[in-house]
Amino acid sequence: MPSSPFSAPALSAAALKRVQVLLACGEEASETVKSFAAALGVAPPTDLPRTGQDEFLLWERTTDRPPCAVRIAEPRQIHMRHAGKYAAGDVGEWRSFYFRGPTKAVNLRARNLMQFLALAEEIGDDIWEHHLRAGDYSAWFRHVIRDEGLAGEAANVEADHGLEPAESRKRIRDAIKRRYVAPTEPI
Image (tube, rainbow, N blue to C red; front, side):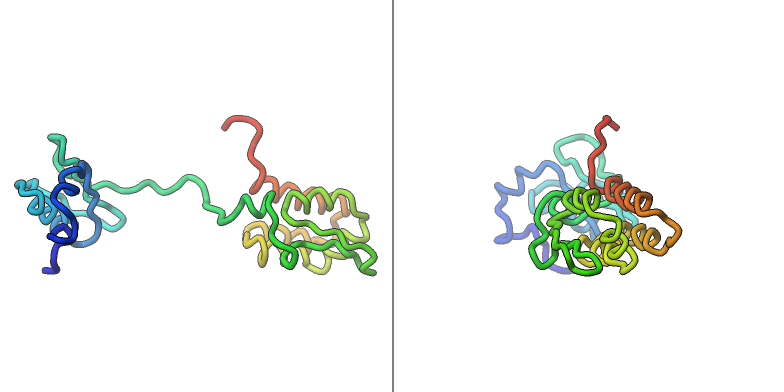
């Protein structure tokens, strides 16, 4: 059996006595609880339940409740790494989206998704269509924004050659807003 993480000099007895709740995980969760109790100099709880995969053994040692197996709830939202930076921050000069058009007559820089949306409404249809048909929007969403779902939606719009520029703008705008703009109504 491996040495206890609660043995001296790993943690002081004074520090261990302040612990009121212990969460133990893994195949050795019961042994962890027993080791903790031994380090405190108290009798370990009896009838420790077995934990399954994705479960923890919870011991609230200052209560009369016996230890129980608990499962941590899955988050209800998808974590989007650096979503705020992509929505309203600055992705950097080299990673920004540049609306240039087929003749490179313009050079409008979108530092983030909100600027992208604002510029997308201002540019002419020829510039919008040039980038749309080149697959530039989905590429930027995939490689810079790092949002595969948004890139996939944009790729579908890019592939639909029957869409008018106003409709393709609307579909891409709606996809961005669904992911990066907080609702104005309480949920």
